[in-house]
Length: 449
Length: 160
Image 1: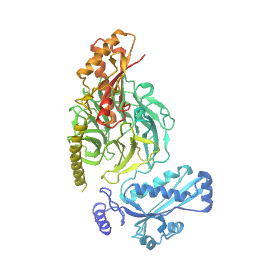
Image 2 (image 1 turned 180 degrees about the horizontal axis):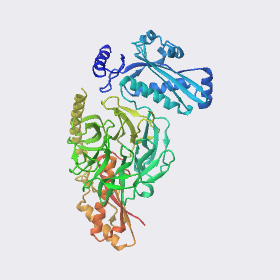
Image 3 (image 1 turned 90 degrees about the vertical axis):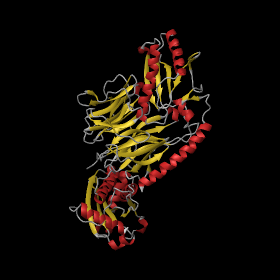
Image 4 (image 1 turned 120 degrees about the vertical axis):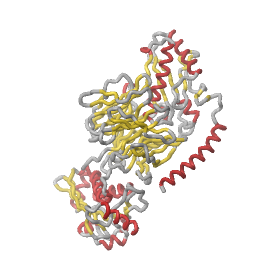
């Protein structure tokens, strides 16, 4: 561990000379086999705040619940090892004022989070501090005021701040996942749009399950969702306003439209339109409703995804005879095949940093989630399984969420569909808990900051 | 390290794949039910009228019609000519071993291959609509080559 810190220290001095000095830094560009030991002291609270918040939210001790959210987030990131609270020697309220660093060093904590929860003027006020235990210094102090019912988000925002301070990159915890909730036998699956916090809490169902729905994706401000619905047995791309629940069909196409995504500025929807057995890629401007045909080829062109600057589009096509990944300019010119490995390649998605494309690969009966550079070089397969597909990036481009299906027997028993996440490094693969079976996840951008 | 791990696991998969495919050929569904990856059995088949099967089957990733499929579709066309008041929906389906969006397109391609063939036998295009369900509505919920072959299909359904 000491050697590890030393290396990071060197890295830090060389590459980031302008940043304020600190002993703890986390390198998230490699698989982290030594997660940073961190102590999350339960946020303290005075008696009157505790009882007022208990009355309001029916939660006995909100401070400790918020600290549990932070702890769980840090743990699932794979970069941190939150220490067992039983070993904490110092009381939360005193630690928040001035930690006795020897006590925290004794239990091998390298970083410490302390905080306080106050209820005043019907508002929830949360303060927190991040401490560097080895240097004996405060690294960050922040306070938020919000309505009490937002208390879970406070935990996520604290995690984002801590993550950013310690890794140098934006977090991804104050975010949501939109996905398709699944129920029922394989031959008559009932599918509904569902939305939840990134940690699996606050699940809400946005459609009733009367019609088949697939592939929901957020717009850049996370207020709208575009998806495929079989409403009245006409598979078409729809737009849903999450707040109002108003849905509308996108464009007036005489055939199936599918595989929708927003452009990075949120002004257009890009999708496939299938006509007479041929699927091409189209865009529709949401303001003036102008439709443009982007690809024109007698093959299947689908699963389009814009680069974050909006200048390029990646998609998959079987124009070579088999499903492969292509990149073109956003006006449809300069089409170049980028996947040349063995097997079939699909569902390309451009990373939010712009440097990578995540994809699904099928080779010799196995499905892989992988990443490649945007010129197709440097392919890395992150995970292999019986069936998995459709990666979606965390807003900081460090984590991918996708869905995985299990094999069933002749009667269809044993089948399941679940959401999973994995770090770009190929480490830290874990199931993302959902109330029902789930597929087609799409990650929102950061809700705050 | 990571790469090495991947190579190693790929190697394992290759070996396993070889072993399994060895078994698969032995166990593989008797050739009376699948020929060249296309289902030829009658397990799931329904009939639009006596002697007129409602569906045709496809090879993996393919939308071309086999001799047997064309035979079935000529029967459907003859039946449609006789019953000129009936309209049909051709449903295109794919198996579960492909990405969702590509399979939607593939189902549409299969349904249109059927529609085109029916049209060449004199059925007007406005009597035939198509819909793709991709891999969303399998008829056999198994995860094995025989189940997949039954699911790669186009089904002609009465619309009225």
